[in-house]
Image (tube, rainbow, N blue to C red; front, side, top):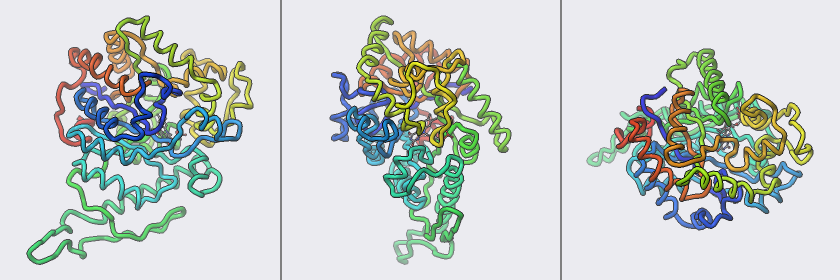
Length: 437
Ligand SMILES: Cc1cc2nc3c(=O)[nH]c(=O)nc-3n(C[C@H](O)[C@H](O)[C@H](O)COP(=O)(O)O)c2cc1C
């Protein structure tokens, strides 16, 4: 367990947060935010005021079209659609802050290692080491189809491709060492070409022939996150990630997931004690417990089953319109997200849920536990879960924005600080300095 809790705020550059239909709520400002940098900069400044480690942009890069074999329900309800790009927001938010880290999801499907290295490193450079990369290998067939890559590559093979992807990124980053950069104005010599190693890589899936596109950064490589939780996903995480983001809908699941990750670390030559695991939590804060519960109900009531199943079907790669919502789910198989499927199917008592129960769990928070109550109750739950699971910290899923962020920062953060379990000031300058300390 870390000596203090670390906190990240999940955001998504689309109409909804994790809470479906959040855009219909009178408190929600995200629809306006889609057309305004100022909205995201407000959120960034609030999080920095609350001493958060950083933002974590999840990303759904293409429209889910598995449910009923169609994109219609996704479009009709604004389910993970529109698919706006979070990358420009990273720049806007970094420009509005000085300490806040900004992690962004960028899939290894639909881009090249060269472009990924160029985009992420340029932002890391400009933000003085405050940008992180959540490396996903694209679980959705929609993403492959949108990018002209045909039907979905099988699950483990996507990770094999992603390993090659990362190998090229490392080579591009290593291509230009610090000593190669002269910037000698007097003699007109920008760099010493003898010290630069161009990349010439030909793999089974990918190739790259290039000089590293960005200057070396004194802040090192962008901080790397990973969230795949299948066996192959964990192997990938051990190789490439500094911080692991996981979702479990209950504490026993979080403990089990931690044990699995520790076993994977031991198996793949990493030190289990070095793992930094952050779990998702969704706080719903009101001045009384009854009001907070009422708020959760109100948010849930307006979500049509079709909207939830459109998202779920996309995530697990199975058309859930073919299942009876009131029967326990049989063993589903998926080529999409195996890690998320496992979380989806089981309740806290270990029993398999019916589709309707699972959908209800997922509608507000994609299976992330909801922590509902007064600021004091929410702070206590955060502390309890942190201590019981021994995790490194939490990635917070908002319901409506920006009020969820405002409420947590103004009402819960001071209580965590009073308990001595969360920082009152930043100790470092870069994302890595703060999150890893
Ligand atoms: C907590 C969590 C968050 C994730 N966030 C994203 C995301 O924002 N965008 C995305 O494309 N995939 C996301 N994924 C998908 C994973 O990165 C991974 O590609 C997928 O779960 C398949 O891997 P697995 O079967 O090993 O879990 C997420 C998965 C988890 C468990």
